[in-house]
Image 1 (cartoon, helix red, strand yellow):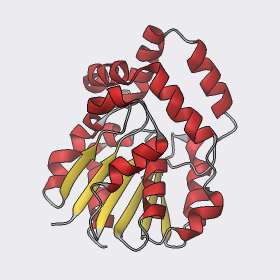
Image 2 (image 1 turned 90 degrees about the horizontal axis):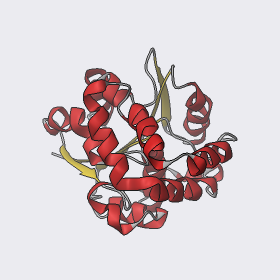
Image 3 (image 1 turned 180 degrees about the vertical axis):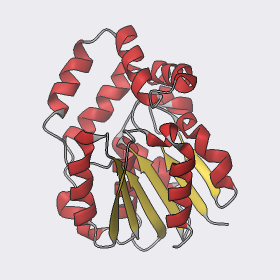
Image 4 (image 1 turned 90 degrees about the vertical axis):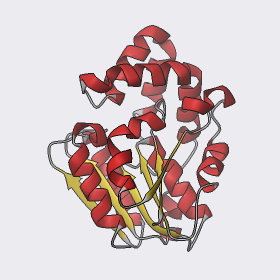
Length: 227
């Protein structure tokens, strides 16, 4: 049974993979990582290099690496740091370069009072599903505004477009059709990675692992099991 490493988005935690862990554990040895500044590692403070290292600690030959949202950026950096080792790479709503809207997002987050920001992020990180909202709220409370802003600042300085061609792992890029902001960036990533395939998932948004967990899990298994 091969390793499947799950990387959550920024401002979230490994608990965001609750709808995946049991189902995917039937086919893979699942490890859901808490990035620095998040979850059980909230006290560490966010650092992008440390985030990549936190994932690489679990990489074994033939491991599958799955990242969603900001976690997809970390996943791409792991693939670049581990050439020839990954069985596959799965990227949900990845971004290779900072979108034009990021500067505005950072400013809004910086000016928004933390309790209000917590509620806003909980809605996003629950996949707009009420049953996940309290978990998402607690996750963001542990992460905090400072760590989220640090993560976004790191992304703002990162441009991987010229390095995408160096990713040698078989790659599946997925993005929900309701996640309009990330459709074009996902296409850029898929076009830049030599062995990548792009799937646009009808009717789902940014965190579709929570919106449609059965479809998400089936998509992961169908791709990773073939590599």
